[in-house]
Image (cartoon, rainbow, N blue to C red; front, side, top):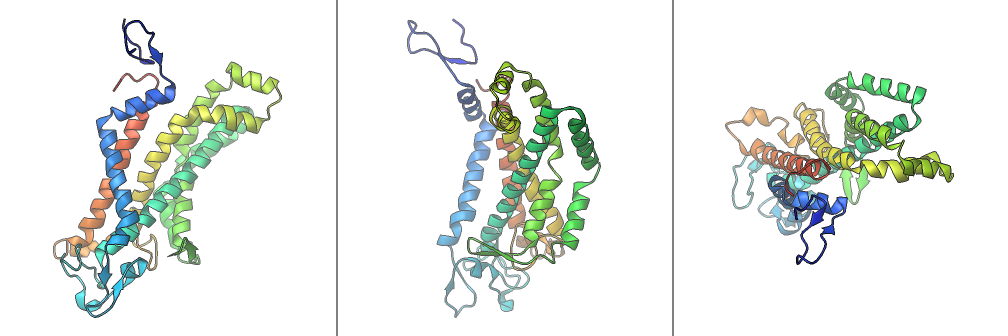
Amino acid sequence: MAHTNSTIPALNTGQQPIPLSPLALAVRRFRKHRMAMAGLWLLGFLLLYVTFAGFFVHGYCTPLSQELKGEAWANCNITSIKLQPPSVLNPMGTDVIGRDILARTVYGGQISMLIGISAAFVEVLLGALIGAVAAYYGGWVDGILMRFTEAMLNIPSLFLLIIGARFFGRDMPSINIMGRELTGSVIVIVLIIGATSWMYLARIVRANILSLREMDYVSAARALGASDARIIFTHLLPNTVAPLIVSSTLGVASAIISEAYISFLGLGVQGATATWGNMLDGAYRYLETAPWLWFFPGSLILLTVLGINFVGDGLRDAFDPRSTRHI
């Protein structure tokens, strides 16, 4: 007896095949996707690095000072050891004002990932809401929202990001999140990245819900008196979870790269708050004389984006009901 994609082999020939739920099928496909699993392990390592490395690795601001841990270590500088190559005391070297590169990659990675995750959340929230409302109500509501979406698609998001960071990022007050002092430019960058990257997701969600809104279970819910909001958030959006998960995953990588773009131009996160992106600001002047300035933060950005893209590809294949890969 041939086994279909929705069953697993029985323990013996006298038993019927055990059916698999769609979620179980997706997990099975994902676990058999080698690149996705490699990306998941890579992301796990990077998350452990930025989360816990600061507890185990410490440094000295000066040879005679006490040990420094936490963000104080990342921002502590001494000009007499500026542009020092990797050594035992500074495994990744020091920057142009004598700050430890290792400490800044640890605490800068926390901010880079925070920006990526927060911007992806804004992207998914806007894209899912606009796409769902446009598809569910149709008519003039759909027309207005889709024309607005098309107008946003015609505006270069990088241009808006540069303009917003230039005119709003420097004037925002600093904020304190879980004991971390963050410049207001972090909030501006998150909002601009999220507000300029939701359009493709909105069109995907709209297309899915246009087909789902005519299903019998939606008609039954409407007949039972369910409100429009309940139908959208309880019955329609949960059935479009696949594109939402894939988009949120890839959106994190896109946001990290976008922040690195503008930070390289000197318009990213300002002040003492380190990110992998703003560590690259000015590093082009030392491409040959001090390659550790760009190699370590650049490599971490590269590995993070690769890991996220591998996981995103695996999720896309796993949630595709027509996919026969990795079964």
